[in-house]
Image (tube, rainbow over all chains, first blue to last red; front, side, top):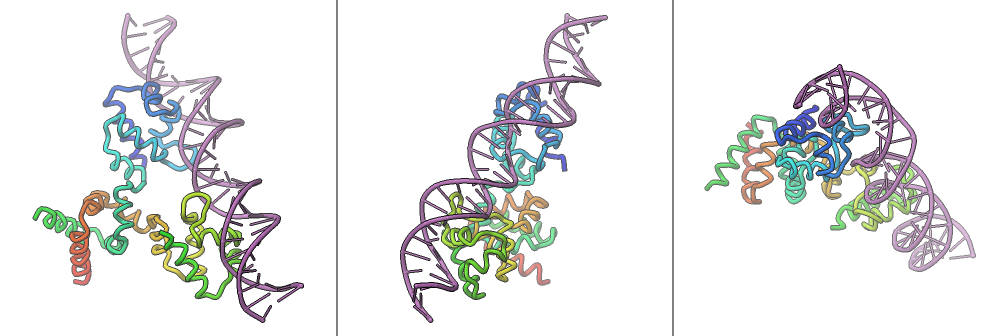
Length: 112
Length: 112
DNA sequence: GTAGTGTTGCCTTTTCACTGCTACAATCGT
DNA sequence: ACGATTGTAGCAGTGAAAAGGCAACACTAC
């Protein structure tokens, strides 16, 4: 599960930034950034939501996608779950195939 | 939104425990417990997940329900979201009526 | 009037998310 | 070949916030 760090590295390279260039842009030290990209954090395996947010905007990444890769639930989703807890508790129990058919229906319903 | 504390109080009363009785059972001080029940925490408005877990088991409450009341996403749900992020990102964008019809379908699909 | 209950304000501890520094190896341009 | 730049890694230390403790208080109700 080092996918998150890899993604950040990819985005950074794409922008042509070095660690030492990017670090001050997002307000952290370059050595910390290195650890983030290599999933070598002293504790836990993803940085704060605030840092992920800044990384997303500086590197033009999809913030929610990055959050999910980092094992965090984006606020947009969390809010919805708290509004409709019963629905999501139910859906969380569904197997993958059921989930996909349900997603398909959601798309159809939404498009009407 | 003081619903969480109310629920804890309700469960505690139902068990016939006083604050001073329950506190050591869940490993905190009784005064802290009082603040929890009255949503008077110095900061935030819900205790740690660890405490919620112990409260749930000691008071025979539904842990996930309590977590949701406390504005936290239960691990069981979080895990599923991280496994199927695309589906849940989609569902989170649905309006309430779409969500409910989708939930209804999930039940039917599951029962087949 | 004292025993048990709950409330409140302030205080302490622990955890988190880094910092800052250092030293090191690899790679690059010229 | 050389310095310059880049990334890696270790580790003590920090500031703020989270989580909870303590002591004094007030209300019953016996």
